Picture (cartoon, rainbow, N blue to C red):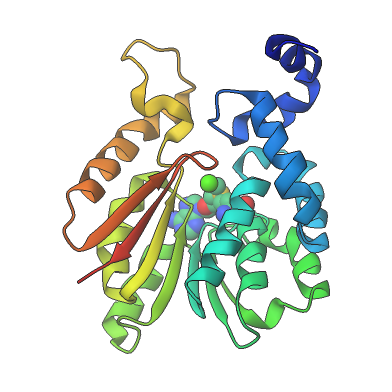
Amino acid sequence: MASNTETQNGEQGRHQEVGHKSLLQSDALYQYILDTSVYPREPEAMKELREITAKHPWNLMTTSADEGQFLNMLLKLINAKNTMEIGVYTGYSLLATALALPDDGKILAMDINRENYELGLPVIQKAGLAHKIDFREGPALPVLDQMIEDGKYHGTFDFVFVDADKDNYLNYHKRLLELVKVGGVIGYDNTLWNGSVVAPPDAPLRKYVRYYRDFVLELNKALAADPRVEICQLPVGDGITLCRRIK
Ligand code: SAM
Ligand code: CA
């Protein structure tokens, strides 16, 4: 039997493709999860969208297949119907959400970039899910402010997935706590930020990783101290922190 190291080296080509999508220390173990439990159960539309996204130059941004499966399961477990997504890119997490919601479910989806959303849109349309999505092009913060001012959206969302500009997460949090219902969930993505949350000060980090790291550290501290939510930080993908509003 090959040793772990041999297996990992032998599969290096494949792991380069997926290694950055998980913080799991063993590439072989991560590949095992994908091959055993994720890819065989991945809906055809999600597979198609994942393959389209893989060809896009910014594919590093996409939600991984295992995290997509997790989100889909979570939404079903909480019976989510009215949801929001901040940061769509080509729509992999959006599709995972749309597949989980009932036919009259709704997703308010926001991104400053419509072009990338439109890359995945044909897959969403073909799957008969486009009617669940209200896509708004532009920065999310003014939309949240508008909804709060409006008044009628208070406490109406079952679930919000935040996967956009990390320097705004605390600004989103402040507003989302008014918009999500008591008992509802906000999922903040990338809260382990490439593992950089524990990197020593002199560690060689990519420029964007270094730049956003302080915002992620500040967010993690603030969420841990926030009495309005119960939290659970999971090492899925690049780390996701679930916040359940309790007051
Ligand atoms: N959830 C997506 C998926 O499953 O593929 C990945 C989202 S990607 C990591 C982050 C996205 O946030 C980018 O598409 C970017 O255009 C968007 N974004 C950045 N700043 C934003 C803002 N202020 N408001 C809304 N979207 C923003
Ligand atoms: Ca993400």
